[in-house]
Image (cartoon, rainbow, N blue to C red):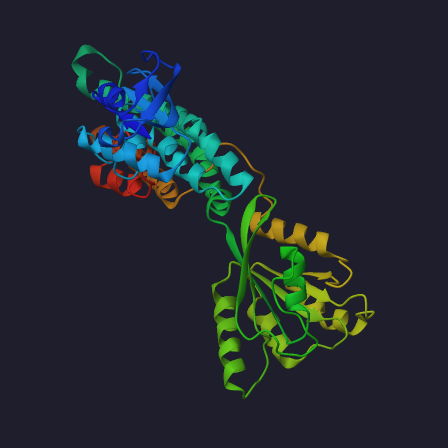
Length: 437
C-alpha cells in the first residue's frame, strides 16, 4: 500500500507497529496488528519504506507498506488508513502528482502507463526508453532552436529604437528550414512507434482446405485452430495474439472463401470478408496442388496495393509449376509469394521474416519514437505552423505576424511534453491509468 502527502508518515505510524523509527530510503520491519477487540495480536509482518519530500516519486512524503499480500490484511490496512483521514487515489494520481511536481514530463508519464500495459519485451523496452526521456531529448533541441528564433524576432521588434538589428529574411528562412528535417524524421517514426505500441492484425484468407488453419497453428506454435481434411471446417473467426520479434500481432484464421448455400458457412464467409477488409496485413494462402480458381483470382486482385503476402502452401506435395505460372501477375503487382508447408515447417521462418518486414516497412528501431496519435498530431501541428511561418517570411509579412505562427509551433511542441497542456487533456491522459500508479 502506498501513501503520499503531508500526513503519510503520521498515518503509517498508526497503521503498523514499527520496530524502528522511519528513516528516508531505509526499509523498516513492522508488525500488522489485529483489531483491539480481537486482542491486537500480530497477524502479519510488513516492510515499511519512507521517502522524504522532495526525494520521492511524487515529490511529497511517500510511504510504502509491503505486507505478504493477503487481500484480507491489505484490506484491513486500507480501511484503517481511510479511517485515519486518507482517501483512495484516483487512477493515475501518483504519476499525475509526479508530473505536476516536475519529476516527469508528459511523455514520461504516459510511458509509465505503457510499461504497465506492455505485453511484449519490445513494448517494455520502448516504454522504458520513453520513461528515461528519449522522446523529450529529441524534442528539446527543436524547442530550444525555436525559442531562440522567437527571441531574435521579439528583440528586433521590442528594441528597434535601441539599434537592435532586425533579423533578415534569409536568416529567418534558414532557421526555420533547419527545424524541418528533424521534425520530418520524428513524424515518420510514428509508423513504427504505433506498431510497437498497438500491434497489427493479420488476416489469413484463402479457399477452403488450402491449409489456412494449419499455417495459423504453425505461426501460433500450438494447435489453436481445428484442422481436418474436410473443406469448410473453419466456420467462424479464430484469433490469437502473438509476439513476432516483439511486435504484437493478432492472427485471424478465417473461413474458406467460396460459393456456398449453407447458412452457417455463408455467415462465416461474410465474417471472413469483414476481417479481410479490417486487417492491416493479409496473408493469402494458396494450395500448391490446385490451380487458381476464380475466387482466388478475385482475392488476389482485391489485395493488390495492400500490405499482403501470398503463401503457396503444401509445397511438399507439388512442384507448384501451375500455381507459379498463374502468379506471374501477382509478382508484377509487388505481392511477395513464398512456398510453405504447414506439415513440414518448410518456409515458415521465411514467412515470419516477410510478415515482420511488411509490418515494420523495413524501418529500423530507434530511440524516442512517437507512440501515440497525440504525439503525432503535436508534431504535425508544429510542422504546419512552421510552414505558415516560412510562407509569411517569404511574402515579407511583418515579423509580428510571423511570430504568431512560431508561437503556434512552440505550443504544439510544448503540448507534447506537457508544459502548456490544458487540464482537460491531462485528466484524459491520467484517467486511463490504474489506481495507485
